[in-house]
Length: 508
Image (tube, rainbow, N blue to C red; front, side, top):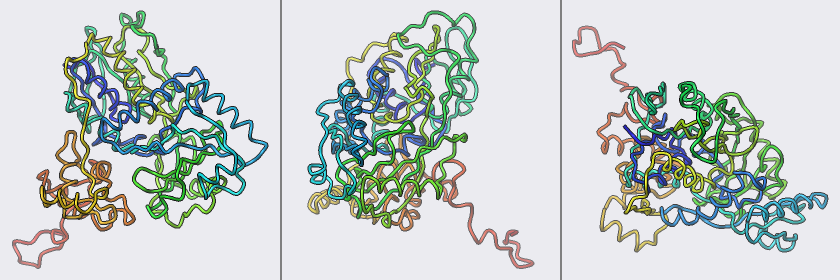
């Protein structure tokens, strides 16, 4: 029996879990995938938005600006890579200047500090590779970049250290409402809880409908909080965004996040450095029906290449090391859906968390935690530790600092991933944290191993061996991203027919 079950271990679910861990209540996060950060949270632009784009007065605007302020604070507390590098919205035509003014006024209405419009000469000094057609830009110094994987993992680790339980490979398959409590079947196990938070990303509309279908007439009463979600729900439209990721050799092509003037389909294609030293270019914005449609297309990537050239010249696309696509949980009203489902239901939605959802996540976590803690009557704990120490990064150290680590643990001297200079000790640390890495992709999210130029071509077998050793796995049990993505299916010799009369041989 839990006080709260959170459905979904993306950046929003983990932010809510971290904030709920401040309170004296039992919390469990159930996730259908094998790790945190397996959906939208792992495939996005990694941007800390300043908050000038959202409609004034919207929940999105409020939480974006508050989340921006909290993001840099949380990054320090949780030892997460984050850089307040600032952002530029570039205007490439004198006819479009009014668009910059609209954004500036909107940002000021939202409470974004220090916004100003800069002219071409100053813009060129800030960004030498800006387009020759650029005439002016909106400068937002509070914009930045963050490690979305590291942030989500750090929030989960901090929540776990403060008592939150995580259950993976646990999709919600059935729910019932009885005696004012929820009975939830997740991963084949029956769980009970007083309150549920739906943070299921692109599946949040399906989860909402599943739980609402289990409500009885007795549960329909005045809601307990100010933000109310109608029982008839909402519809999530998966919006695909395709990206190029360039090698670290291209990481300094721009110094700030470079946006196009936004359209009704989003903020357009951006060009930005990443906290890991790469250059990211994208995304597209294409509405799709399939909630698993994360394939890239020739047409989409061609669009990214063409549009990026409008704001930044000579983008070195020859340095691309991978392409990827992510899905945003778009909703037609283009605002976050946050609140208790109408009635005294104990069901809370955290849905339609599209851009700027990553930036807003600390504020979303705080808002939902306050609602849910109030519902279950959970006071704040007398003692709570909001800090977390990350995995030491060998690539960031001087030789003397690296040597000191090796003296403490020689495994820091055994470099497994050459492209990113990731040591055996870092991988072992990632495995044994709570919640820890159990797959190649989980190792990648925590250490960035396999994310370099060779994309795991050299280090994958070595990481597999470490996973086998540390977790007592067989080679066939090691996966790329959980069940169904096994890399080894058997041994070649087991498939060779034995000569006739050989009793020890097996069949082909």
